[in-house]
Image 1 (cartoon, each protein chain N blue to C red):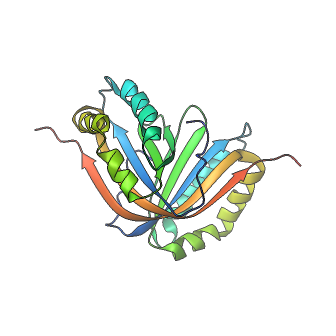
Image 2 (image 1 turned 135 degrees about the vertical axis):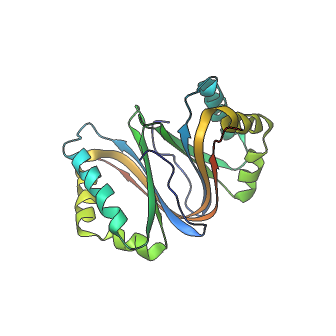
Length: 112
Length: 112
């Protein structure tokens, strides 16, 4: 993703997924691409932002209309496979946080 | 940051700061280091996670006890200077979202 996600005014929900990769990245980028393709097709998807630093720590934040949309995405068949492989192979450690976005602001630089 | 932040059980709050850097990074890393040093000294600070990808998109998520701690950090004198320079110099675009973390889970890989 190359820009902050454009989301509607709050309230809506966010899932913050923070992960530390293991040494084994076999099949990882293909799966990540597939998830990036699938998630936006889910009902209630509002946007996603993702970054991984050179130290291996990655943060992906996805935005959703409500908790029901998050629950449905969690149960998506291909996403379930990704979650399983993530635990078995790709991640040394991760945290998953489900949040309600209460306030949001945006800034865009403009020359005077 | 090299690992997901260790936070207490929810509820607590999160600030998701997603930014796209401008070309001008003069003084940026010194200021980022200073903020990383200052924020943990604020009352109610629970942790921080940060990643910036090669495409220039950065995500920093800081975790706080309550909205009052977030408001106090926003008004910190040195942080106000950082915010001003961020808008004038370092960022082409950013989004700031204040959230209530409602659910959280952690995973750590262990060999059988």
